[in-house]
Amino acid sequence: MSGAFDGAIVLGLLVLFVILGIRWLRKRVQIPWTTSGLVLFFVVLVLLLWAYQTTT
Image (cartoon, rainbow, N blue to C red):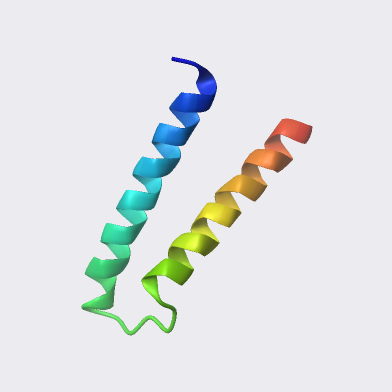
Protein backbone atom coordinates (compact mmCIF):
# COMPACT_ATOMS: atom_id res chain seq x y z
CA MET A 1 0.00 0.00 0.00
CA SER A 2 1.37 3.39 -0.91
CA GLY A 3 1.47 6.43 1.29
CA ALA A 4 -1.36 8.08 -0.67
CA PHE A 5 -3.75 5.25 0.16
CA ASP A 6 -2.68 5.32 3.80
CA GLY A 7 -3.42 9.04 3.94
CA ALA A 8 -6.83 8.56 2.32
CA ILE A 9 -7.72 5.85 4.84
CA VAL A 10 -6.63 8.03 7.76
CA LEU A 11 -8.55 11.03 6.37
CA GLY A 12 -11.65 8.85 5.95
CA LEU A 13 -11.40 7.61 9.52
CA LEU A 14 -10.92 11.16 10.81
CA VAL A 15 -14.01 12.32 8.91
CA LEU A 16 -15.99 9.39 10.34
CA PHE A 17 -14.90 10.23 13.89
CA VAL A 18 -15.68 13.93 13.33
CA ILE A 19 -19.19 13.05 12.14
CA LEU A 20 -19.77 10.80 15.15
CA GLY A 21 -18.34 13.41 17.52
CA ILE A 22 -20.50 16.18 16.07
CA ARG A 23 -23.63 14.06 16.41
CA TRP A 24 -22.70 13.27 20.02
CA LEU A 25 -21.99 16.94 20.81
CA ARG A 26 -25.10 18.19 19.05
CA LYS A 27 -27.23 16.35 21.61
CA ARG A 28 -25.56 18.34 24.40
CA VAL A 29 -24.58 21.68 22.83
CA GLN A 30 -26.28 23.83 20.19
CA ILE A 31 -23.94 23.90 17.16
CA PRO A 32 -25.00 26.49 14.55
CA TRP A 33 -23.49 24.65 11.54
CA THR A 34 -24.86 21.57 9.83
CA THR A 35 -22.92 18.33 10.08
CA SER A 36 -21.97 18.41 6.39
CA GLY A 37 -20.71 21.99 6.76
CA LEU A 38 -18.49 21.06 9.69
CA VAL A 39 -17.14 17.99 7.88
CA LEU A 40 -16.39 20.04 4.77
CA PHE A 41 -14.60 22.64 6.91
CA PHE A 42 -12.57 19.91 8.61
CA VAL A 43 -11.58 18.26 5.30
CA VAL A 44 -10.52 21.61 3.80
CA LEU A 45 -8.51 22.40 6.94
CA VAL A 46 -6.72 19.04 6.79
CA LEU A 47 -5.97 19.48 3.07
CA LEU A 48 -4.62 22.98 3.67
CA LEU A 49 -2.37 21.74 6.47
CA TRP A 50 -1.19 18.88 4.24
CA ALA A 51 -0.46 21.27 1.36
CA TYR A 52 1.45 23.60 3.69
CA GLN A 53 3.45 20.71 5.10
CA THR A 54 4.47 19.44 1.65
CA THR A 55 5.71 22.90 0.57
CA THR A 56 8.01 23.38 3.56
